[in-house]
Image (cartoon, rainbow, N blue to C red; front, side, top):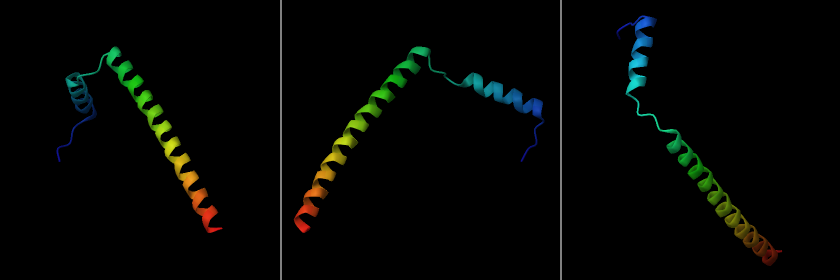
Amino acid sequence: MAKTNPFEFLQQVREEGAKVAWPSRRETMISTVMVFIMVAIAAVFFLAVDAVLHRGVQWLLGIAG
């Protein structure tokens, strides 16, 4: 493993950071909004599944008890 001094390491980090294709502000905002929309959809879905399972378990326990 090659040893690198801290100055060389920071220089290499800067060079690699310059190669990164950073998203624009607009792309970041669109992605953020999409994440929030998907989280809301998932929350509603799991709320509905939980309600259905809750009713099913209540019904099952009502029959058994």
